[in-house]
Image (cartoon, rainbow, N blue to C red; front, side):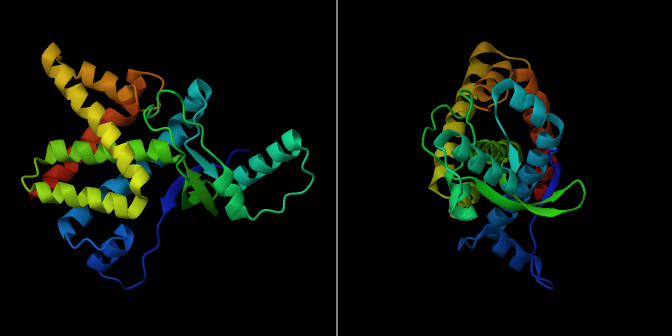
Length: 248
């Protein structure tokens, strides 16, 4: 039976102050505290959103386009070992769990970041299951990369940050934490984001139809309706809330 992951956990040292915890979370030498604060808020929101999407829509998304969002490490190891035994006639597996996990690729459907064609290693977190068990989990890096990139672009649009260096520093933190592959994803999402905005203006859209379709085309989701309900609306709501917090 599939284990339902309720949340991703990150443990801070006991007694650490807020600035220390932010620095540990971001894993960066960047000294822009505002940029780090915004990144932490966005990244933790994306983690929560990812788990919520997986719980509510994961099965439907998988049935529509074969895209897994979150898998337990133990399930991946079992899957890889089973395939090796069945397809290659291997009777016993002598590789470490680390090697097995690195050999695994999440399926990337044709409408998930179609311009990103290189392998990206899975993201690994600790997750809490529905029966309160703490286990190792792997997250689809392409889908996560899309979500964090989209959230950064949305907060940049909605917060009206006058300090462009804050936005630039958020991108530096993104690269420090997740690597160059995620920067490639970010620029790909940004191109679609800007194209969608321009098309919406040209066509006089009243409800962001063109923008939504452009982002749906690279989101990995089955339809624009799914994109609106799963990503567009909740991300706007959160970024509007965060924008108000930043202004105050």
